Length: 289
Image 1 (cartoon, rainbow, N blue to C red):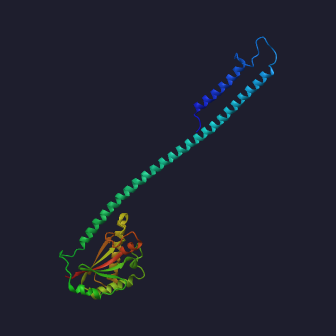
Image 2 (image 1 turned 135 degrees about the horizontal axis):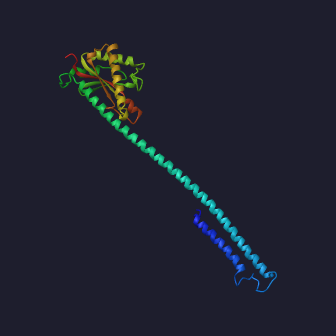
Image 3 (image 1 turned 120 degrees about the horizontal axis):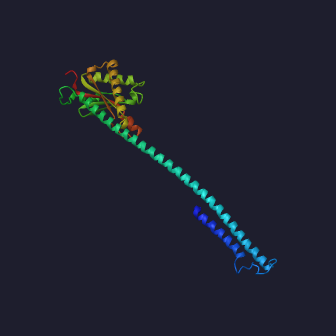
């Protein structure tokens, strides 16, 4: 580290005093070997001349050393000033970064609150929509033997058909019906829906059917988007069954489930693909009474 300016001045003063002291010693001290005796004149003796030269050399060396040390201190002080300037610059940058992070944190908190409010809104809409799909009279659904027996007669290659309590579920991966993330039909969509329509006409011509569209289960800030997408996909399946499959519209109901009922973990791509599905749910009661 360099010396503070006050210490440097003191060092310089000390050096000058030493120099002046040396000169005064040559001219004013009683024991000065270079002082000519009183009343004498002429040149110094050889011994005095040699001693004077030696003392001058020492003073010259001291002065050179002082100059060297002053130069080093000037360099050190310049380095210190540069370090201080760099630290002040770094501190300013750090303060700006903290301000930016605080702003980002505030924005993230606001978005989190918006996502929570959106999820609550979607859940409320889902409950209302589920309530609207309750069958008239509010009677409990009871399975009948003909529906259970017809399960084995449904043959839909590549699709999972399962008994779920008192209903039958035909599970169709959404990625086979729609371009992922959209409600745009794929090239095989019509063929799959024709098979579904034929199975309904053959096996469940009078059963009440609900078309459930499910998202990938990630939820969060995408809850509204997922619910909107599944609603559009359910509507597309409904239109396909009614217009192309000639299934009576009064036999069908739609339910946009969004991300509320995933079948698999959402951590993997395979799990999310499994969750994206349309389920054709056949109930044991009939739509015409």
